[in-house]
Length: 213
Ligand code: SAH
Image (cartoon, rainbow, N blue to C red; front, side, top):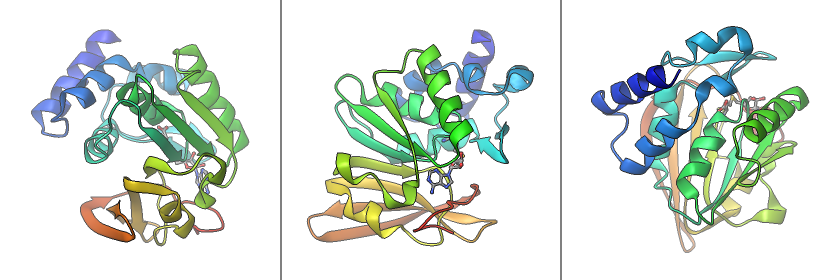
């Protein structure tokens, strides 16, 4: 599987999805095959989303790379992810914020929260990632503010609680749009100002919750 992983990362670099050394290193390290269903292991390094059960998917590697690039992650960052799914994306981000950083990830579907937690434990991310069951559209007030927030599902609009939980100088990525197609929106906080930028089209499963669909 290591050869396949190398080949996938090389192709993400060649195709321009990976530009930064820290994104490349993180994606070379995290074993995606440990985050997919047993019967799909041999497809772990195809650049496509894969089903993880309960109608949800692990994002395509190129989408994880795009989001990791846009988030400007640094060692020491406290990060919030909405939509743990398999835990793969959280592991990649945990690599990038080490040492000293931490990833909190929220999942609303119990079997997936357990799936993510087990995958993260088995691959050595137990101490750098905390999986929490609940409605992530409300954020995670008790651990706010966050240096970075990313939403791995699509919202009808930027959820207000997430904006409120962003640290000054912080950045958030959230796919905003309809259920079928969204724009990847970046919100950057500068004091009381919030700068919004679109990074183009994407397709995610919907954010279901109080500040989602
Ligand atoms: N980041 C994941 C993929 C996420 S798929 C990975 O690397 O595998 C999107 C996930 O968001 C799904 O598991 C879905 O159940 C979850 N989700 C949807 N609405 C949510 C909400 N309000 N709070 C937390 N998780 C939510």
